[in-house]
Image (tube, rainbow, N blue to C red; front, side):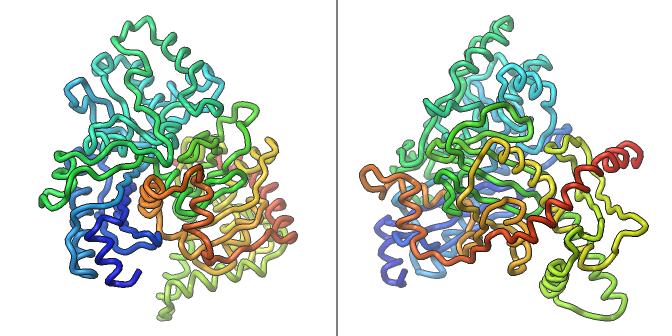
Length: 532
C-alpha cells in the first residue's frame, strides 16, 4: 500500500488489527484492504511456575497487551506519522485450551492454568472413556473435571469458564463468546450441528449430578462464534483497557476470538477440506482438515475445528528440533575449538544438505529426540538418545538424516493413524525453523506426510496476521463467500511459494528408518526408567 493511501486508510478506519498472545510473545499486526501487513508491535513475556501451576497473571496479560498495542502505535507513527484512533475491525487470538474461571462478580477464582500444565491425567482418562472421544489434558473440560475430582472449593462458584483470548474479548466487549476453533479445544464439537456435542454435555452433567452444583455445563461455557460473525463491539471501557492513552475510539466491530491453531490455519491458507498446515520448530504439529469425522477414538489424535467449523485432526508432538539443534551446537563448539568461525545459518545449511547424501537405511542408526514426554508414543518423560550397532555405517550424512527423520518420527506415527482412517491430503503448507534451509526439511516432511509440501513467503507472518484476516473477512466478505474462498481468491491469489512432492527414494528411506524407530522404543523406555 502506498504511503498516502496507507495514511488515509489509518485515518478513516479502513484497517484491521490482529493481536495474538503466544507463549513467549504478544504480537500485533495491522493490515489494510490489500491484506499485507502495514505495521506491527510486540511484547515479550514468559509464563511463571507458581505453586506448580504454569500461569500468567492478569497484570501480565493486560500489561503485555497494552505494551504491544503501544509498540504498534509507535510503529504506525514512525512509518506514517498518524495516530491510531479506530479500525475497521479487531480480532484477538491466543494459545488455546487452559482454564480461566470467574464468579458472578467477574473475579478470577484461581490463577490461569495454561495449556502447558499436565495435571489433569485422571480427568483426561475418565472423560475420554466416557465420551469415547479423546480429551487431552490441556483441554478446559479436563481442567474443570480434575478440579471437581480434587474437591477444589472454587468449583461451585463458577459463573463463566473460558480461554485466554475469550477472557480478553469479554473484557473488551462484554460478550461471552469464543470462536468455534477454540471452543473445540474446550469441549468436543458435534460436526453436524457445529455446536457443543449435546450427548457429551448430558453425559458430563450426569457424571457430576451428585455434586449438586448450581450450574449446568452449558451455563458456564462461552457462546460459539464462527468466522465471519460479528461478536460485539469495543466498549468505552474496553478501548481504555486496550489503549490507556485514550486515543482509541469505542464502537469498533470485533470478530470471534480464536485459538492460535485456527489463526495459523488462516495464515497458511489451510482451512479447506483435504488441506493441512504443519508447524515444525521446537515442537511439531499438523492440522489436517477432514472431509468427515474419524470413525473411532484415537488417544494420539486431537480433534478441533477450523474457524468456520470444519473438523480438524491435530497431530501434536512435543519434540521436534531441540535435539537436532543441540547436535548442531556441538559441531559449532568443535569448530570454535579449532579456531574456525562459521556463520550459524551456513552451518545448518551444510549439515542439513549433507543428509541428502545418506544411505537409504540411514546406516542402521536410530535416534530419539525426546527432550520431554511424547504422548503419541506414550511417554510421560523423555531422554534424548542416539543408538547404533557396532557395524552401523556411522557417517555424517547418515547421522544428519537420522536426526532430521527423528524430528518428524512421532508426527509420522500420527499421520500413519490418519492414513488408516483413509484421510486424504491435497495440500500441506509448512512453516517454522525446520524449513529455513532450502529443500531439505521440506523434502523429508513431504515423505513423512505423504503429500506435496509448500513453503510460502507469507507463512512466516503468523497468527496475529491470521486474526487480522479474520477481522477483515468479517467486514468484507461477499454474500455467501466462504472463508476458504476469501483466502484463496483474495488474500493468497498470486502468493509465491515452492512446492515439493514426495520423492520415492525419500519415502522408502523414511519407512526404513521408522521400522528401527518403532522397534527401538523399548530402549527409550529403559532410558527413562534407569537414567535419573
